[in-house]
Amino acid sequence: MATAQPVRERLHDTISRLVHRGLGVEDYWRAVSDALEGAVPSQGTCLMTMDPATMLPTAEFVENGMPADAISRLLEIELREPDYTKWVDLARTGRTVASLSDVTAGELDLSRRHREVRRPGGYSDELRVILSSNTGTWGALTVFREKGRPHFSPAEVRLVTSLTGLISDGLRRALLLDDACAGRHDTGMLVLAPDDGVDLANEVAGEWLDELGTSTRAGTTLPLVIRAVARQARAIDARSSGPVGEGSTRPASARVRTAAGRWVMVRASLLGEGTTSPVAVLLEAVRPAEMAPLLADVYGLTPQERRVTECVAQGLPTRQIGNQLRMSAYTVQDHLKSIFAKTGTGSRGDLVARLFFDQRAMRLTVPDELHGVARP
Image (cartoon, rainbow, N blue to C red; front, side):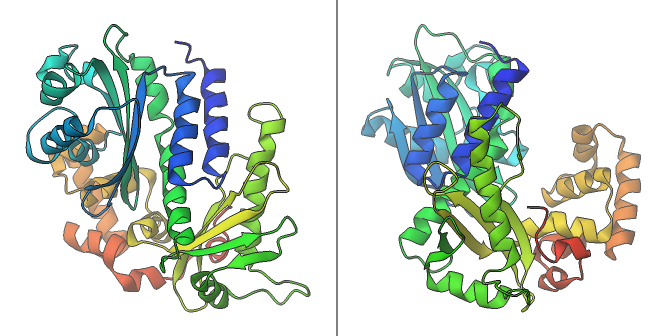
């Protein structure tokens, strides 16, 4: 399989446009599966959405999958019995992609689900992909091959790993869009015409717009952040008519603080193809974990200090942090002392509370460029 840089860039470009296409969960899964097929051939895929708080499955979308009784046994193994590359284990270790052949050194029968269910069903290797963001795990993708097919190669694993952040963003957008269209009351949705006029707005979106307000510039009817992410979504789609790599690659999303001191995440996606298509703008309250990178900026944490902080938030001890970041335990302790001093905390527990859970920290004064659009 070719995984040269041009192939990787083309696949990234294709999936980036899918992320901003305004697709529902099932349509998004099918489109991503089709895009991956050209670079990572398979005989079937399964997308499973999850409750991010518990990682329990909430829905599944399957192409050429197992029968219902086999799925029940797979779920039982996943939730109650030891096995290789279980979803919770991948999420805990921070490994986003793993092939069964790699973790078993080619001895697939070491896996209980393969030995009992997948091999009897005619399947061979499987590639598991955790779809996570800093707000939790929203789903998981399984790509599988039938007997007689080659195992997933290290190059294929690396390729899919490079795309997981992008695919995860698309799944989160699709879930939000489905929720908003279903009339649920925690996601705001605007539909903008090509001239940025508002064609539709639900009640939650109206509340966010009231808090965001508009500038005093004559003729302004929408907050700057709304217009910026909408135009970025159109710019991403416009790349399809030009060479790979041409145009903007920044995601159509931004965090912004309202006049009431709340933070909102704004995401935009095209509802169709072409820059004249309507744009869906989704608005939801920023989760505490999404504020951590912003607050790291506020406290002036260095890149290494940020990585140490992320490990602390995962509950890792000093030695494990050192192993993961390839630094000595003494260096980890030096970084922690600096982090504590910068954040005004005195322990690991205090640090995690400050960055992830302390609501007062979410109202800190931030640099001027982050009061409005966070580099849309």
